[in-house]
Length: 94
Image (tube, rainbow, N blue to C red; front, side):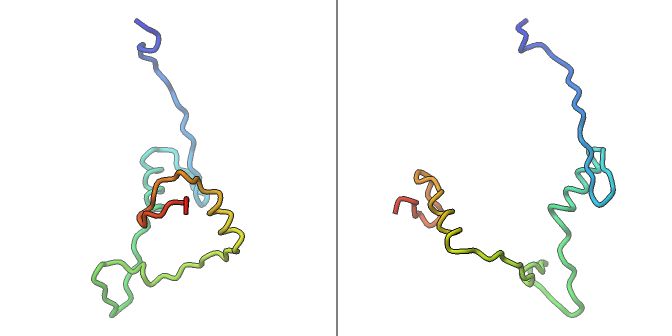
């Protein structure tokens, strides 16, 4: 049998996840805290407030970083000219 086809037993030491002073070492614990971090519960509705989509995120105001003109220009000109077209079908080769 070829060496690449032989079954091997590999033991991987998984790192612990430390969040807010609490350590998570099991897969289930890590999955639970990661799900809560990446997919938080929607905001609760205020009394008397109604919504049709059960989501209150549209009322949040996010702080956007200040962008300087030269930063935008650098980002555009660093882009690959052969990149695929976006939804607007405009390429970087204008």
